[in-house]
Length: 248
Image 1 (tube, rainbow, N blue to C red):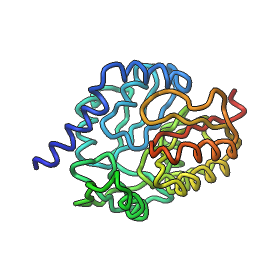
Image 2: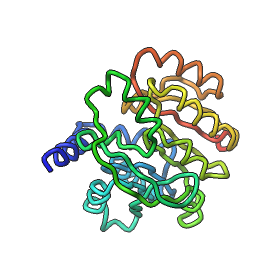
Image 3: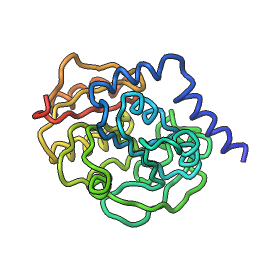
C-alpha cells in the first residue's frame, strides 16, 4: 500500500509539481491544438497534458488503463464536460490485455512484455520492478475516432505498445507524438515506419519534458532517423512529433 502511494505521489510531483512546466506545455501544444479541437491522450497518466490542452480550449479524450490513475483523472477532471475519461487501453483490435504495473514507478507500466524485457537490461531501469499486473479492456484508435471525432492531435505514450496502438488506426490523423527511448531504439523506428505507412508526414523531436525542438525545421523520416542516431548515445528519452504535410 505504501509503495502504491509513493508511486502515485511521485507521478503527481513529476508532472504537476514542477514550476513553470504547465505554462511551457500550453505554449508548446498551442502549435497543434486550439479552441474546439479534439486531443486524444493515449496514456494520460495523471493528466498533465489533459490540463494543458484544456487550457487551450481543446476537448480531450483521456485514455488510461491503470486503475489508480483513472481515479486521479476522475478526481481532477470528472466534472469537466470537455474531458472524456476512458479506463481502457488501445491496441490493434478490441479485446483485453494484461498490463504489467510497476508499483514504485508507474510511468513505465506496460502492455508489452518484449519492451519490458528490453528496457530491463538497461542500467537506468536496474531498480524498476513490474511487480503486479491487471487485465484491462482494449479498443482501437479507429473506434475511438468513430465515437468521438477526428483529433487535431494524438499523444501516444504507452511504453513500447505504440506499434500496436497504431495498428488500430487505418487513416492518417493531423498530428501525433510517440515516445522515444534510446534503449528501445529499434522499437521506436518500427513506430516511425508505421506512421510513415499511414500518410505523408514531417517530423521533429523534443528531448524529455523540455517542450523545445531538437531541429529548427521539420524533417523527413530519413532525417529524423539520423537525428535519433545522434541522440541515442546521450541516453536521454524524448518524444517524436509527426505533422501531416498537407496541413502546413
